[in-house]
Image (cartoon, rainbow, N blue to C red; front, top):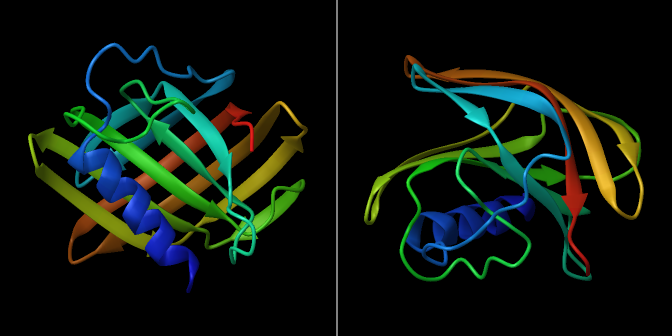
Length: 161
């Protein structure tokens, strides 16, 4: 469970402050991913994979959003409105991950956000090299009548270590 605090901390920083305006973001290299956050649909347009720090219990994290995010983000400053996703990768090699740890975040205003943290569904890494990582996601989770899902395929850049 060591991966959970890292995701929570990273997404809290996105929600608490995302570097202000002027970020071009890293658009998806390829693919289309649709999400549902408590009945509200969103479509991911930006994303990247960031490797884990040495000694971490996971290989890296995929960060996605419907608003611009990039490898250059320091996650400080004014929050960006929108939907964000973080997924902990147990491996960055081609293969299937059952019940990956996912956090979804919806930023609705300055310091106003809702989030969900869960492990569900599947993530299949379909290609992985030094420049990009591609995956197919089929994640569906319901808790206390709140529904969350991610469905589609993505290819995102890999941030330099």
